[in-house]
Image 1 (cartoon, rainbow, N blue to C red):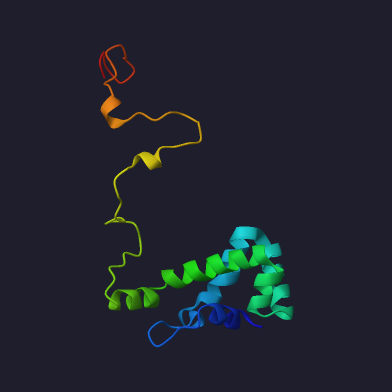
Image 2: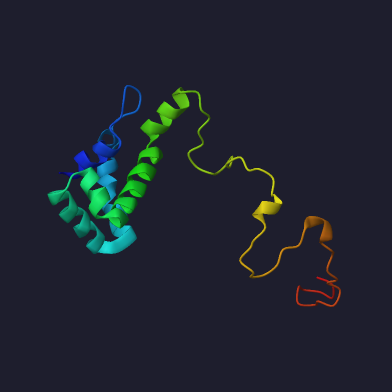
Length: 142
């Protein structure tokens, strides 16, 4: 199996969405895997593609397949041609978080850190800090 066959088996496209190889995903796969795990990861990909189909790679090399899947899907949805299809379906699709940003919900109690490092202060409990004793900001009181 070759790289373009691998990505097309994972994202074959349909009447609206293009196959992964048509937007160049196969051209990015090796480079991004190399960034994630060096040449050894790319060699594992080559070896797996020589002997197995996509289902076989997933079954025999689940850790490798997880990385391949992440790279293929993220790269696919980064491609302008795919983003245009998403927008044509009527979805508002902001490809990057800036300048408009992604919509964010309000901070909820469930978002409070649970790792035990540092601490959390509820907005209503925040108090001003007296800085009058600081003189390092260029003057007696900053």
